[in-house]
Length: 248
Image 1 (cartoon, rainbow, N blue to C red):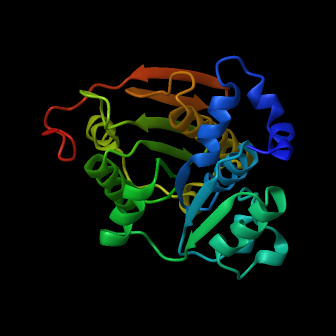
Image 2 (image 1 turned 180 degrees about the vertical axis):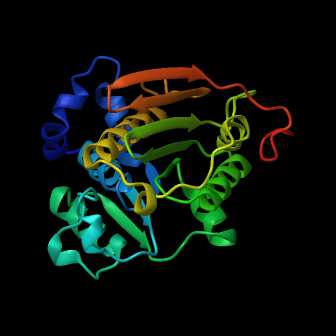
């Protein structure tokens, strides 16, 4: 770590449980962010500002004017541009030391598996159930920690899956328990700051995972009801019959 980096990250380095070693872990880390929308925007910005050394951005969408209400990594000049290219420019303006790789297509199959295998942690910021389940399964297969987030209307949730820890649940366990249905912001709406709150928590959890700092919310579901600003944390049991992790 050079003198400029020591100055830049000094407020993190002075944290007693994090210090120089924690920052070094961030600088060496490779984080895969899937989805550069409402959640992926704050995740990418906070991870870049915190000093994650290598960010991999995956999204196949273009910036639309309706995105600008909440997707803060994009601006008016980015309308019609691919989200990963827009995000890459914003990150470069914030922290030029971060190595940014972009995947301008939907991750699936072998491409998804390859990217998950190379990552130290995956942050799932996508907006569809099929992709979430595929990402969850790929993370289980490659023992890669996963930080999953979702936000709709005035409600948000965060779950950390760590396949390296025995007898801990996965995202599919949560779906089995709650019977989660496909919902989208385009049909249900979402309040702009909500995705910022949930995305910031996802970034914090990713930092905790890669730096071994604090205790990530593994085996727990963190819920926010933003109308009353009520937080709840629930223990999430591993489903012995889960189609994704039941046999693990």
